[in-house]
Amino acid sequence: MSESFKRTCFDDDAYKIHITQGIPAVDALSVQMHYDPDPIIEFFKEGQGMVNIEGKGYPFRAGDVIYITPSELHTTHFAEGVPIHRVSIHLNRKLLEPFECDADVFFGFIEKKKKGLGNVIGAEIVKEHGIDEIIDTLEKYVSCPEPKYHVLVQCKAIELLHAMSGAVHVNTTEDTQPYLESDLINRILQHINNHYTENITLSTIADHFFHSKYHICTAFKKYVGVTVTEYINIRRIHFVNDQIRSGHSIHEACFEAGFHNYSNFYRIYTKHMGLTPQQFKSNQKTTDK
Image (cartoon, rainbow, N blue to C red; front, side, top):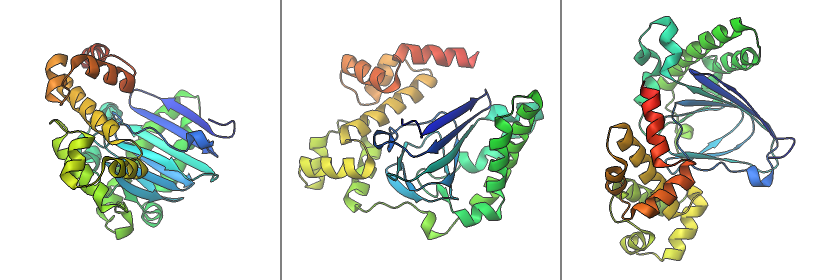
């Protein structure tokens, strides 16, 4: 990350607000494809680029808002040489605990959305619903150290959820829908998403779609941002995590996800997650207490 490209983080149990500003260095133009544990609302005050969600590309411009659910695999590609000012707001249901209100009323529009569809709210709708002003105020409040501003941040975050819910209901314009040039890659993504727990590899995909492995590998990396094998492994790891959360053993989850060798699974999991499967399981037990 270059000196002119900075990320400031404000983290709490109920929210995380990350502010990214500056011109990204060439090696920081792309963010690794990943899942986030909480819903995210991202406001681009400046900048342009592409957010890839579930293998579908969304071009963004200044003034747009992108919202992403925990079940959506995503990555961001910034345009080279263009200044960025992005406010990323991660919210969870703990936000509403002090107010004793129905969380479904505020989080329902995110949790019920169709995966990989309608993730962008255009600048005009954002402004019409006052979302830009709410996020501007959030950005000011979150940097203030006085305790009263912590409460004000929570109130503004709830107001943001309410405004977003209204904006989503009118967000039906075609330019907010995903864009991906390659119909082949769209079909391959759908095939992987339907069959990643089975014995699926680059070779079986090439045979299924009657294209060379080289052509598929090159095109997939261009449009999705990771290789076919990496994408399959990310899907499987997310499946493993869901199975562990549901009480399955790590060994059982590994093979149900489509891994055929535990040692290979352990190596891939640890490299991607930055912790072992056992550590992830222990963390879930701590969280549930």
